[in-house]
Length: 234
Ligand code: TZP
Ligand code: MG
Image 1 (cartoon, rainbow, N blue to C red):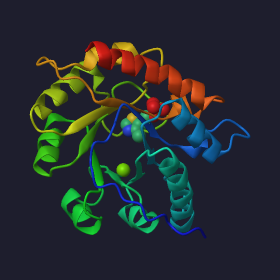
Image 2: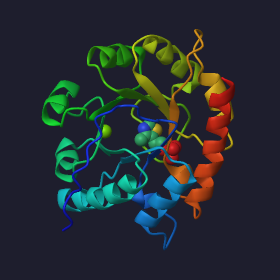
Image 3: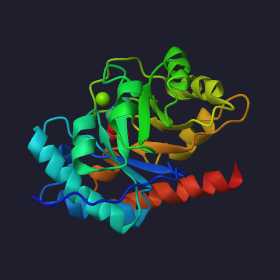
């Protein structure tokens, strides 16, 4: 087994613009996971979360260690979905927690100082709670319908996302939307999610539009161009 690299990221100016959430089961036939990961970063992914629910612990740790080497090469932060133990073992940059995962406070105590902690939020009440728990960022969703995850909460829509963004005003907590976002609806999503007080998303999280693509570099670049252009004009 490879040794986990010993780099840490203590300065938190994280770029959430194009947030890749992985799902190896979505890869096209014969597409290698690490090749896809590297190409998606080359296309403009700015942060990566390994979301691999079906891997056992040893497989997940090894996947994380190898992914960290690729992410480090491009100075891209790497987060782990749900599993604080895996994040610790692979010495990655943080975790993304769901509402029923380990409490943020506990994860903060376990992880190295300066680790990134994100939380999934589906309601304004979740957002208020996330602010109290001092998370680094929240993932808001599902903004649209998705085939990638069996949803356990209603689809929020752009106005729902906007209402949740409004709560974040002045907190310094960043936000990405997730769920069914692709290059066709991205610009509409970005414009639609802007809160009444003009707060926009800091980025979008995407699974299938990148992972399922035979050309993830191209898929990412397409999304990134739209995001950067929106950010420039907003
Ligand atoms: N959480 C809410 S929707 C979703 C997750 C993990 C999946 C989004 O996947 P896709 O393929 O970008 O719709
Ligand atoms: Mg989770």
